[in-house]
Image 1 (cartoon, one colour):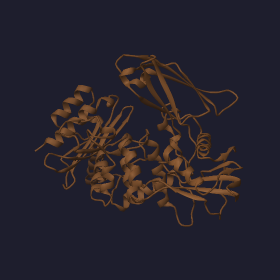
Image 2: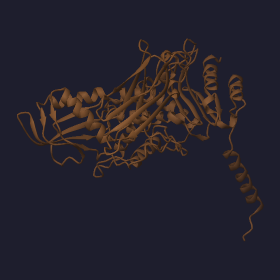
Image 3: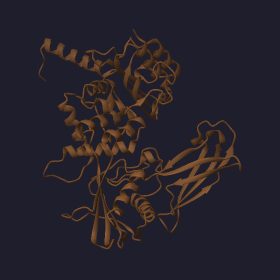
Image 4: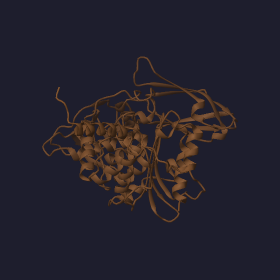
Length: 486
C-alpha cells in the first residue's frame, strides 16, 4: 500500500471531518423564543425542522435553520410545479380537447362513432364538460349511431393502484392522471340535515343509474367536530356487473354541521365519462345509445370541434389555494411538452416532465441537487426539497415576469383557500400569501409575507416528524414574529 505524505493525510482527515459535519443538521440559535417554545410544547425537536426566511431584496437570509436539509414538503411542492408551469407554458396556456366524427354526418345524424381525444385538461369539471357537450350539439349533430371512443394516447403513463398511497382507493385525491379527466371522476355526496323528520338527506351529484345508495345516517344534535370521522362508508362492487356500485352510509351526522359534501371516486375513467356523456347529451336533446371504447383517432382527419380549457393562470389558483393534487399532476405532465423533440414522440410522460423541470432550473442557475419530484403534487413519500431551495425559488419567482399570476394563486391568510381560518382578524390577515402542505408526519408552509414595514419576506417552514400534525402553532408563531420584527 502506498503511504501518503503527512500534509496530504491531514488534508484528507480534515475533508472527512468537514463532510461529516455538513451531513449533520445545522441548527441556529436565532430561532425566535416563541417558535422554540411552541416546538417544545408539542414535542417536535429542532433537528426535525427546516426554516428559511429572507427579504426578497436581501442578499442573506434573516433566519436559516437546517435550511439545506432535504425534507418532504407535502403539498408545498406544488409551488415548484405551478411556477415552472407559468414560465415554461405561459399564463395564457390552455389545454385542448378534440372532438371527432368518425363517420359520415347527414342531417344531424353521425353514422359512426364519436371520438374524444384528450390532452390532459385538469379543469374539465361538470360545468365545462357540459359546455363541451353543448359545443358538439351546436354543430347540428343530434344522433350518434355508433359508440363513444376515448383517445387517451397523449399520456404515456403507467397504470397504477389508486389505493397504493394510503390504502383508500376511493379518495378523489388518489385519482391518477388521465388524458381525458372529467370532473376528477368525482361523485359528490351532499349531506343535508332534515330537522323536520330527524333525518339526513343525501344527494349524489352527478346522479348516476350505476350507483345504489343506502343511507343509514342518524341525525344528532351533538357538537359537529370532525364530521367525516363520524361517517362509516362501505363501497361494494355489485356481482355480475362491474360497473354498478353500492355505497352504504352508516354513522352519526350532527345538525350543527349544516350542509357538507363528501367526495368519492367510484368508477373507472371510461365508465364515468360514458355515463355522464349520455346524460348530458340526452339533456340537450341528443340521441345516443352506444357503448364506450378506448381507441385512437386516425391520423389526418380534422376535428369536429376543439374545446379549450380556461388559461393556466386561472387553473393554478385551484391548485395552490385549495391544494388540488389531481390538477397539479396533470400540470406536471403538461411540462413534458416542453421536452418533446420536434421529430420525437407525440405523447408526454413523467420522465419528460422531470427533464423539463431540471432544464428549467439549470437555465435559472438554481442548483437543486437534492430536489426529488415524483408527480409534482406533493402527494408522495419520495419528494424532497430543502427549505433553502424552496426559499430561493420563491425569491426568484418574485423577480419573474409571472410574479403577479404566481402570488395571486396562493391562499391569503384569514381570507381564502387553505389559509382561510388562519390569522383571521389578526394583524397578519390579508398580509400573507401562502401554500400549506400536510401528510402523515409532514407539515409545511411556504410563501410571501408583507411585514408591518411593507417589506416582502419569503417564509419557509418544513416539519418532518411524527408530531408534525401539531406544528401549526409553531409555524404561526414564526409568521407572526417575521411580521412584527423591527
